Amino acid sequence: MFHLHDKLKYFLYPAPVDMRKSFYTLSGIVTSVMKRNVQDGEVFIFVNRRLTTMKILHLEHGGLVIYHKKLESGVFKLPGFDESLTSHAISWHDLMMIVRNVKPKKRLLKRRQKEASFQDF
Image 1 (cartoon, rainbow, N blue to C red):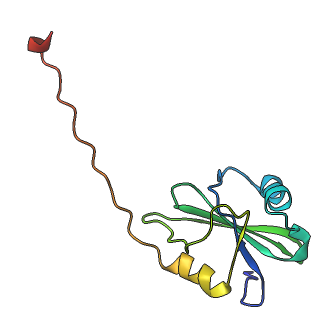
Image 2 (cartoon, one colour; image 1 turned 180 degrees about the horizontal axis):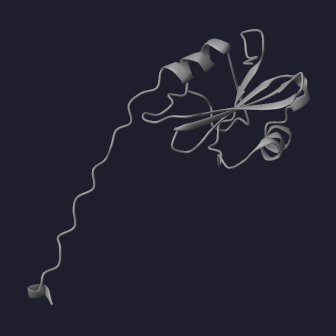
């Protein structure tokens, strides 16, 4: 079941996170860097550097839960925030805007390399 709702407190971690991290390492970031307590029932949001993957860590009745969203295309559009802070409080509405307002990713095309010919040697 999805137990996130507008009565909870949400905190966005302002730095990119390696999405290989799981329960213990994300909980470690919450405790040591964000200076919050996972056991308080707050919701913690982590996004990778490319803004294509999001993990949400939350303590529910049975234990810790990670919601994981990976975009097939586009990137998450994050709200503006002070990157010097260790966490950024956001609302349920802000989280829904992040998840729903995925913007198309601009693709940079690389210029093709000229193939070497025998005359170049």
